[in-house]
Length: 131
Image (cartoon, rainbow, N blue to C red):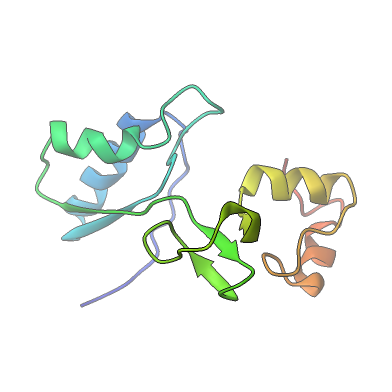
């Protein structure tokens, strides 16, 4: 088994983009493809799990590994999903990357459970953060 990074520009074209990236990875020899929640989505234009469903409509010969929305559970002390954590939403810390970028751009430190303070300091530098 090989786990490797594949650097390609994100097109943010929703589920079709996720399907395209799955095809490209299959062509490079991958057997599985991780599909996240709201992968390649733009704002609220697509349903957050539409990229999961497109692989059911178009079986391309690669196994999609579907990841649900994740959160940091303060009670568990680690990242979790609905399947792995029974605690109420009041114990959950949202991991929205959009929210984290906005907080960094505004000069606010994101929660240390999500971004280490020393990393947040680097990301707040003017030439680093892309909002």
